[in-house]
Length: 331
Ligand code: NAD
Ligand code: COI
Picture: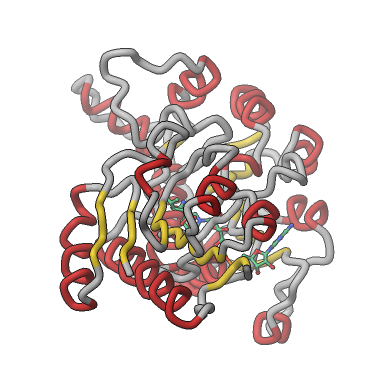
């Protein structure tokens, strides 16, 4: 058995090498993400271990099937950028790492809200200009706010626990009601009703190309004036243009964005020489009431180690037994 891993960063290499030694399984490490050009490198391997926020080549599963590959194990949670129907058609199992560290993302989502609530962008700029005054940028405390959680899965639940620690009132929307949270009476029946009741809306659900924007201009209009929105889930959930309009007009108080609708050509790339061409992005990041980060909510030592080890364990399990606990797509 031997595996090929794409998009391997420096900070992952030691985990791959340790796992390879412990399991006596050869792994070829490729620094680039999967493209049409380098897909042929996977010929001769039994499983592909991949990781990317952008799109996979259209011929991904068809080509892997022609090489006799039986498994694709991604090192992250979201499978929204993989064509699972194609995987099924070509009888390739797909596994993910559903819970490498929900805490990493939940903690980060709260951290960016704190930066917004205490006007960190403004005070950083003022200090850089030798201006150390306070007024008029008085902050808000989380315990004074009602937090709306969209998606009460693994990450949403950790976020709820953190917000409880701050003493916030918590409401939530999720088509699936967790029995324990249900007994606490936090669920609101519709997203429209939730957004109208909360001071902060924080997204913790999967992205999907099919549903269009969850948060569009109409939904933003239903939100409280001056409300905050936090998105560490998927950029596709928010209409970025509508968000920009609402932030500029003052309809919304601020946005904390670790994901962005058009992030693929920007995030995790060094654009020092070319700069960013996306005007919408540039306008968003220039706003004092926006905290934008390049999809790094997941990026902790605990998470990276788990992502590598769980993906490799899953691939080994699929090749040896035909299944794995992390299977998202059966053959
Ligand atoms: P999860 O599967 O444990 O929970 C997702 C929850 O969303 C489920 O309870 C589900 O019922 C709910 N849901 C589905 N559709 C919904 C809808 N239309 N409205 C409201 N709720 C809905 O997933 P998780 O581990 O909590 O992760 C959530 C998402 O976070 C992932 O799908 C991924 O997109 C994103 N994520 C981001 C990062 C990052 O670094 N920024 C890292 C990991 C995951
Ligand atoms: C995920 O695990 O789904 C993430 O969003 C993190 C990663 C793709 C950068």
